[in-house]
Image (cartoon, rainbow, N blue to C red; front, side, top):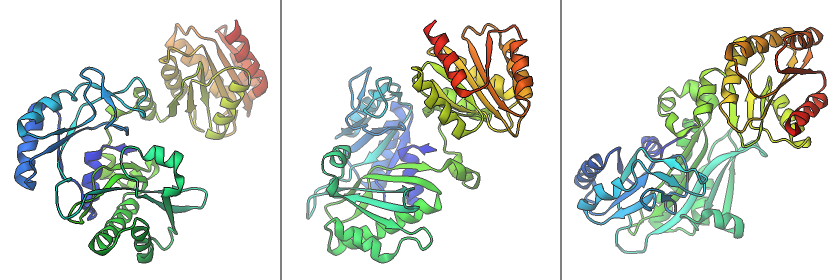
Length: 404
């Protein structure tokens, strides 16, 4: 589960991570009020207005309606409302949102932290994530923080250092010092970075997150280390024990079909293809998608109805798949282990009749317990539903209907 920057910063602050202070707003008027309050709290005279969407690249992104960037600077208090107005309600397009962009419902009014002082401010990159290949957490850090970190990773990977953390023992003090030294820091800035890394790792573990990305981490002109941005992804499987964090979910930032599927207990991910898939089991779903591609089709979704599929879940799956206008056929692939194939077949027929006016062909491949009985129910239904025994047979029937 992703959360917004302003939410992530509050989480980090709770673990002792120094952040760029800010106040979220949903209207231009509220943005002005937030700036007034922020000036009283921090003394800042410049204000950064930052679009709050679940995507990166906001600083280079454009709001379609006004041409404004997703992150802008107001050098006067009087300019905050107008600059916020140019972002709020608009569609922000970045390299991570795709051409469709995302509607901006909130902005973060943040303090200016690039103030003059004894030395020049310096930006760094820092992230913590799970390395599944090693079964360890890994800290990734670079001296090249900022908006172009993707280009650094692609063109100069040697500038990104990695430090693996054994989850059984956690982050050791020498490892935090090693990362800080690797960033070229010394003196008070080094000590501050060690504290920052330690607090950040504690937050990462304490929130059951799968990724923390701070870009940039800023060394201010007076050697403070703070998070100017924050991208946090919390492990969905741990939300049952992270009730407060689960409450931060913003469904407006998620695909509506994926939200609807979740409410029905289905695991659904929308894709760009033309064949809707409904399968019980994630491994079988992946194999089904591969087979569709081998016969010239493209999967329109990943949809796992689980081991306890019944008429209700099948109907919910149908309704979700059929909302995608690109779907030209639906392939249902069920292995009857936990659930009997004849029950699935009956559920398909019942759901078909309940929904009505299904204009795309449906291929149902049933294998396992009572597969023959299930195929007979499908064949005798009189509906535009075709049964198959093997996965290859099902894929060939998909190919035939796509070419018809």
